[in-house]
Amino acid sequence: MTDSVYSSKVKISDCNSYDKEKIRLILKEHFKYIGVTSELIRDKKIVIKPNLVTASAPSSASTTHPSVIEAVYEELRELGANDVIIAESPGGPYNVPCLKRIYRATGISEMSEVCGLPLNLDCSFRKMSFSEGRKLKEFDIITPIAEADIIFNICKLKTHSLTGLSCAIKNLFGVIPGTLKFEMHAAYPNLDSFSEMLVDLNLTLMERKKIISVCDAIVSMEGNGPTNGTPVNTGLILTSDNAFFMDIAAEKLAGIQGETKYLDIGAERLGISRICSDELAIADRPNGLLRPDSKSGAFLKSLQNIFGGRISRFFEPKPKISVRCIGCGKCVESCPQKTITLEMKKGKKIAKIKYGNCIRCYCCQELCPHGAVDTSKNFILRSIH
Ligand code: SF4
Ligand code: SF4
Image (tube, rainbow, N blue to C red; front, side, top):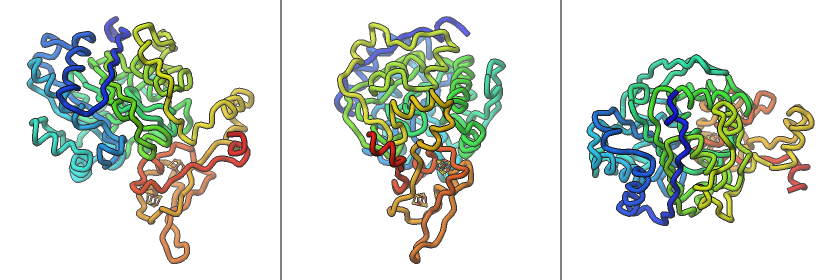
């Protein structure tokens, strides 16, 4: 790996609207700072990888806003890029009808019609190996990403029920095709092993590709992210040539500095500091984001430290099907442990979780289209917080 891969440039600017021209002005400055030049991108295969986790409107703050994507695309075109495509494997099946539905719902189709950015509909994937992988040495990666020279990783700042934070590193989990992501959750069923695999994946990509991350933190998501939380104005755009440094800054912005497992692992493996450098002073905002209900803070953490995680499972919050459930069955399809069934209750179909096999991955909460999966806290935790 070259030195430049591990440089620590993160640029953060205020941006209080999705006005495309305003975003372009900011990106011009950021790209100059990061070193995104005509020389870098000329004749390169470029993929824009947004966060399109579910078929939600941009106002939900679950997905990258189309104005940010359009602004990135137009800046790249101005710099002379001529081979750019948008590609994403959302949080469900990876096939053409699903992709079209997601593009439509997230405003990407409309944006693409206006600016001419091509949308990927090739649902094939390739193997990509990484000899230094600790959990996994070979990944299945969607073809456009596998073939790209440069990835523009256009992520969203969100809290996340499993990992705590979703920004640049977690966004790249969306290069794994469709339901294979559920298999990864089953194969790496706790936060430590999942985080190590996530770092393996990011290092695999970093070894072969130039990755420029741009974070849409104009409106972020707090609470039960990545899809079931609340939009909150944070008024920022971040750009970095290193996804780990981007997330170290994002973690600080979110008010959860030092709490993200994959950043502990990434910092150790890359030999980088977990502390934000001076240039990130702007990120020292007074208000962080509300944590997901699944992250119950210091008490649970202290139990994990004392009992090596064994007792904390008892205290750990768990997903809970609410009365809003309409029995659509999406969570049954998305549960990696196959521990959700549909049952009849008072003449109505409703999902039911068998907790014995539940690994607290929160895929059910993430992918329920009706926001019907809540988080239930143990009564002791409820009385403490
Ligand atoms: S919990 Fe959500 S995804 Fe699952 S059946 Fe109910 S409405 Fe559908
Ligand atoms: S019930 Fe929900 S949290 Fe539990 S394993 Fe299934 S998808 Fe994951």
